[in-house]
Length: 160
Image (cartoon, rainbow, N blue to C red):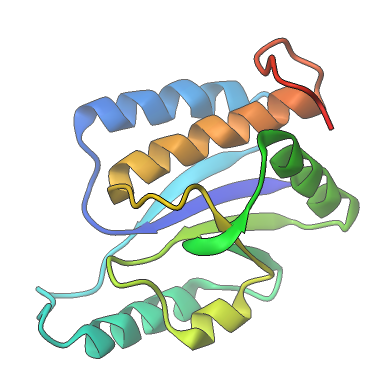
């Protein structure tokens, strides 16, 4: 099963790229993984939020394929523990998912169309984080899930 993190927004700072590569290297022993940055063309007028969201919707939907299992990250989504994340990944594998896409939406969230396309909506926290940091947190949590599933000592909490 391939794992992809899709994120709207700007390029990563060097320290984020370094952290991502650190976790991706560990994850790649078990699953192919990559980060895809999605950027709309031209400078967005932030005064028209709906227009921005529609441009991002078009970009997201143009990349989604029928074999993608889309997991949307949103602060209003379902909060899962790390063992529950691992359980969900195992469930996706058991279902035969080819590619799981974790989508970090734009600064204003996503449209209802994108939300409905998602198989699940997860929350990392009720707090709001910068996109770059969310990318790094995602990589760490995916590695933690892989560690739980493979009985590696990285995760010291309870395994559900």
